[in-house]
Image (cartoon, rainbow, N blue to C red; front, side, top):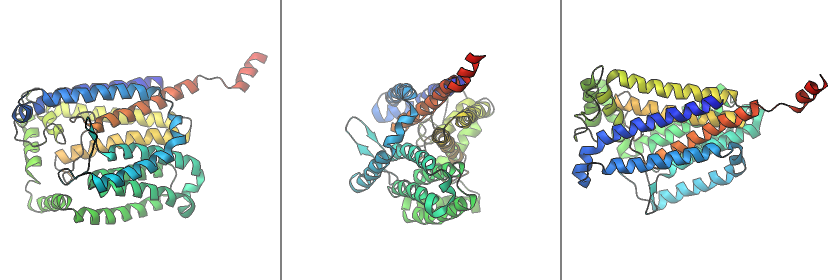
Length: 376
């Protein structure tokens, strides 16, 4: 388990280092145009990466069991924070609300996602076998998932809300919920989430444009069109780091949501596959950590963290190649960093602590075994 913890750290660190290089390449032209400084966005990203690494190390040293006693208070506090954000914070680009503290601004959705994973893990451990009972166990957990994801969704932050809900349902299923309850929940979420998405103009336009593109065979939007051109230009081995054409203001948000297109253009098909293998390796390591963890709370917390990272990566990549409607989801470890990167690092730190803590437990000799060895 100790080796798995170090493996998770080094893979995460390597991807953030690679992401910093790609952000520098993807943002340089925009930085000159917008801020008259070649490395303006790169410098900001490096600060977030360093802060993220510091938090990763700190939270890898904090016992993950210590979050149990505060999970209910924390989830209630973040629910009120989401409500306050909805009332007072302005909407950014029609798709999400941010709290500005002067020195830093952040999306409460980033905080809520992690706290909901922690709280569900605590509740499932407490409910134990009752989770198979719809009214006495499952419904209570599902209400928490719907409440938090619903508050994120109406920010409006449709994609984040749906992914938080998907992560929650995955945790409930792994935690022992019946498959039929999960399927009924998915049907409810699909219908209600679809209706909510159609209420907001930005999400409605993205969905309708995507459906139209499937019918006509045309491009979904200018971003996806330029992203696909970037992938095509990259070929097998890529054009080389710093030689992307799409980053010269042809691809909007090149350093953010669509950075995988720049990555594919500069690193080629081989580099893109290598990055996917890194995410797969991280996911596999996370699953092994979850499986080997001694307590159910730790198992579900580890699974929820690694599942969340993986599904966000999958959706971002799927958006870049036009498989799903455009969202505002960043690529974990690679996209230009904000508070989402910092909370991602905190999550990875917790995952590492689960691995290290259970490694220590594996080496503790039980009293009855120690006594029997002494008698021999």
